[in-house]
Structure formats: structure tokens, C-alpha cells
Amino acid sequence: MEIENKNINKEEKKEPATQPSLTDKNVGMEQSDDLMDKVKNFLDLSFETIRVVIISLIIIFIIRSFVIQPFFVKGSSMMPNFHDGDYLIVNEIGYHMEKPQRGDVIIFKYPNDPSQYFIKRVIGLPGEKIEIRDNKITIYNSEKPQGFVLDESAYLASSVITSGDISEQLGDGQYYVLGDNRPNSSDSRRWGILDQKFIIGKAWVRAWPFDDFKVFEGLKYNS
Image 1 (cartoon, helix red, strand yellow):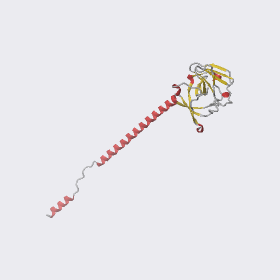
Image 2: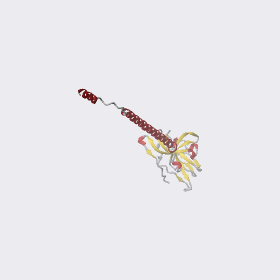
Image 3: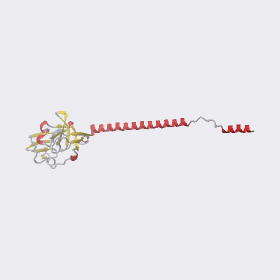
Image 4: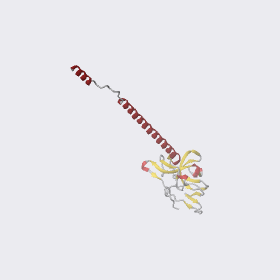
């Protein structure tokens, strides 16, 4: 009886057989799935970032090409209202919806050398007759066929002299432009009438220098 009891006790003390476990494999699979999710999220974020960058570049290209464009003033022909080195933002799309107005400061390709860009002020409009005599600009048009002397006191000092003995009849799409610094400006008095096809746009904002920041608005003449 004692022997049998001992055998029974020994059997009771035997460790249960170890069963194969899938825990380690499951953990590995979960880690792999988590890594794949992270890679997928990273790729999705990268593609979205690239898409945003591409769209932004396209928008910038369109704006720079067809809407607004930066322009540096060179020379003194528009002093004292514009100085050499002024950084301007040019509105290019505005003239697709309306025509240049008298008093607008415009940027255009120099007719005798389109690789150069000029900045001047619009004085005469299509269909008008322009006369410059005795330091006066007289404009004849359908509204005032007898003519009127242009009052430029809004942007010129009374001491500024507009020299010349000129009479010009403007046709369709033709403009007469002058620099504000009349004694030192190469403008329509020298090289003639400006055709609309050369006009790039209107000076919209002076962004530099910062202490001279300005948004340019249309002028109303006293006539």
C-alpha cells in the first residue's frame, strides 16, 4: 500500500505537458500590422503634402503670370511720386475688365525695345487729341470738343514744367503717357503714342520701402 501511495503522489506532482503557444506569433503579427499602418499613414501624408505643394505652385504661377507681378522702379522719371528702387505690385488682370484711365500709373514694354519696361502716367485716352504748349496740356474729346486744360496739381508741383510743342490725335487703343519728372523723362513727347498691346498693368501697391507703403487708387481730375 505504501508503494502504491508513493507512485500516486509522484504522478500527482508531475507537471502538465506544455502546450504550444501562439502568443509570440500573435504579438509579431500585431507589430507588423501596426508598422504597415504607420507606413500607410506616412505615405498618405506625403502624397497629400506633395499634392498641396503642386497646387500651390500652380496657383502662384497663374497669379504671377496673369494677375499680379512685382516690378522694381528704375531711374528718376517718376519722381517725386516714385523713386528708384521702389518695389511695386502690378495689377495685370484689371485691364482685362476695364480700360486704363487718365491718371493711372502703368507699366509697359517700351515700344522701341520691348525687352525694356517703363513706368509712366496715362495722360491721353483713345480718341482724344492732345496738345502741349506753353507748359499746358490741353485735351479735346467728345465730351469737351472745345478742349480743357488738364489740372495735374494732384501729383505735380506747380513748379514742374511740361515742355514741348506737340499735337497728337490718338486712335483706338492708343494712349499718351508722360513721366511725373517732366524734365527728365523719356515718354510720349519723345518716342510717340503708346499702343495698348504694350501695356502690362497698373501700379497697384508700393510694397517697399515699408515706411512708404501705399495702395494706389484712381485719380479724379478737376476740369
